[in-house]
Length: 354
Image (tube, rainbow, N blue to C red; front, side, top):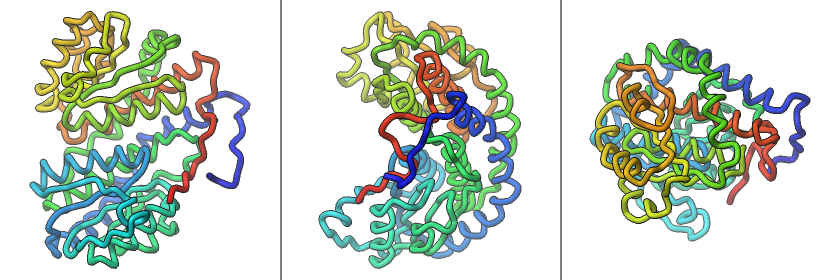
């Protein structure tokens, strides 16, 4: 827990709203100022030919790490996994990580278990890279390489701009590792600004969930980390239980809890992930679910309601845009329920797990 007490702001949600609005500028800053350094680090790492990649993170950053896992496996063709930190921090395991790239993603870079597991990985022979919003953090200090996501100080407890900054930094890293130019990201700042300007659409959508008792979120492929991050944002701000499922997993049992009064939010990527999700959407419609879609206009038109995303965006960078209306949704539902998204109960900005 942090040693400072977060207090409710004079205007509920003022800080979170301001930080969501900063995201186009943050994305542009990464492209202009951060990309050259990211390419340099990627080239150094690529020259050492890591065998595979392990990703370490908690909370929101864990969803960013999951996104990176998809990028690494799809674009690089290398196996990638999410680590279980307790194997080293609690059980004292000493795996052989020679020539393994270990990427630790953290907004603050201050959680003791992240620092300890990264230090242990480096001692076990790993190439260690920290991706943080704090270049002076303990995590950055124990890592061989560091990428600053350049989001600027994040004051609201629900992470917004640091999440999208982490996604873009990780995308540029993977592009650098494979010798790509990151061209798919060039239009993101402008597209993000256009999405955020449609706040009134999200506000109208939020009325559906003001009195919700539970929510189900689903997606596949690159959209699955978005479902997880959106569920986390909704739970930590609105306090509504929100369960994220891969569409494939949803069909293996949890679909039974969905009925005609169960709100379901589906993130439908424009590409292979969306194609894989289509049978799930058909089943949900067949069960009469209240289905809201974040995706292309034709998918929104076939659902109960939704938010249409820009067309023609490469699937691997769509998560950077998909999450934006869902951040706004969490904000608007929280305000509608008479709560302050800037000060969720029982949360601290730096969570110190061991």
